[in-house]
Length: 335
Picture 1 (cartoon, helix red, strand yellow):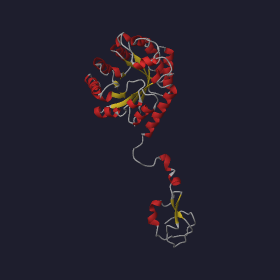
Picture 2 (picture 1 turned 120 degrees about the vertical axis):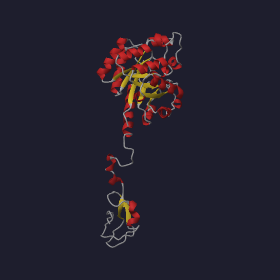
Picture 3 (picture 1 turned 135 degrees about the vertical axis):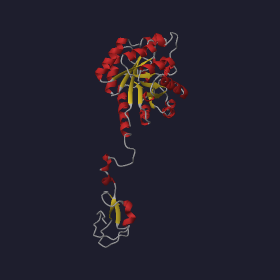
């Protein structure tokens, strides 16, 4: 099984504070994820000033800001991006950011980013998809709120604009923060894989770590999960995010799942268990003293550990045969 790419989604959980953003990078690096991902946008190009906030944003944010005002406080400047990218390099973790408008995509490309993440809200944005295909050789497409036809339309738009099939990974996703377990529909990831014969993954917004771990066991090639330093912090995405220790546990569990799935698939004793065969299995032994020339019967034979002698599967082959030597009680039978 190939190694799952794990993206720790810091998103806007930095709250506009670069010290907090650094601590998020520290936590992601300590958890041994592959990427830490932020968000790149200009509020003026992303949202109208009258746009309402999502219900989860209202629930998770105490102020009464509009969506525009909320996002304006969470913008990263060009200098912020350079600072965070350099800090990621220092910490040995890859920097990634999702661009939400065309200018942001151009900027990220100029920053040297080769992997683009299409957020769920842009899956129906044709000019955006075309720009993604033009600028980025590797593409991850998130599909929250989409039906299968919309997923196919977005995929076809990327291909038509020059993206390569083998360089596209499509993530099943549910865009509710947090996602109720009954709405996860994890098998939809496999539906996408079957329909488009494409690499798939899962972007998770549930509480906890069990669903993304399950996605790895089903073959997810990419996992994306929001994380924060503290779920009680003020901000739209903190509540549906993992805290640092949970992020570490998720990554460790996923790597264990990968190891567990890495075998040949053939049923055979593993190297680690082979040494226990003789200890745990049983052999035919003498239930009582048996003299040379006696016939082996159900009365004078027993089945006991260790498994170094004749297998009890040969029970009926031994019954009725003649003993070629004397056997003491519990002595392993030899023919």
